[in-house]
Length: 418
Image (cartoon, rainbow, N blue to C red; front, side, top):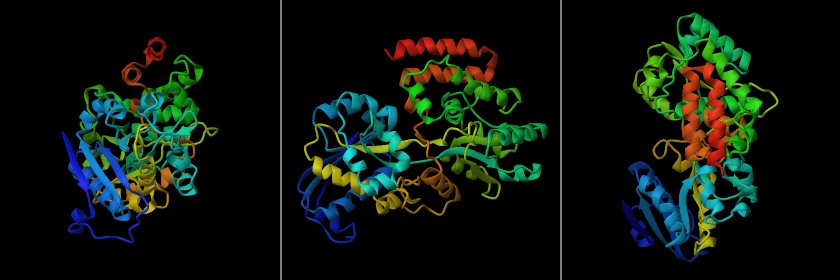
């Protein structure tokens, strides 16, 4: 489905209150393509574009909204023909094909501006390829460990800050007759989250990205160490049984019922946990702890982005739009609970009065100097992500197969990255 909307001041006057002075510094046409086709994100983006229009009344802005799944199949075509001036997409490896094909504009000049360089520092790595930046982020959300605070209090546990504390907590939870963690690996990607954190904490962000890019052997001893750390948890019974038969949603009741004490998951799990009856007095969050103190902490925080196509006609206006999108004020507005309900990428933005959003914002804005990963199935090529996540699931069920699994992944690396 494709929907087009032309924005003029007359059309806006009846529905949008003018905020601040208008600046007639830009003119011509500005074509914006969006994949935010669901009602709430669409309304959020359209309202944001309306606010930009107010500041630049001489611009003729045309917005095209395309169904998200259709957008994924159409993007390469519209980047080469009928090119917009601004387009939504995703960070890291998901943007790489269009960067390497010369279809996205280098916007490193924006990232050299102090307002962006200082306030968006946590997301810079996710927008960087070959030392250059190729877009700006507009929203992201944290991953981490959501846990049953009441169970921790019952067992006298505190939030772990290092690997030894993490394992000691886990042993006490297992000894109490519970699993440390619920997980559903039926659809594979949840195991990718565990691999991301264990590998980034063991070997660091740069190594993790090199592995995703096919530059490191899966049979490298450093990769094996990641799996050995994972095996320590598997061997102590940290995870629920038969997790390969559950989706991530089907794994939620184990935590709700108190059969498992935690869940390594994205912030989107909070709403269903609350809906299932857990209160904020029972539910809490902590950053995945340090394993190797020699590597800076980095996080999974999938990031949605805006880009300027290389063939755009109005790059001056497009750059001004990107500056507007990442400003502290706009980031506060579009990521608020009434809009996207996620995290602003600007460190000076305000966050909704939700304890998990606040903790995630603090963690990603100040406590993640190592970098922000996009999750394994975004950072690795699709085929490699699939075969490796199959390997992660097999390893969690049969850790004794590790050598065979790594040999298989290494053969896949040789084939996929040619």
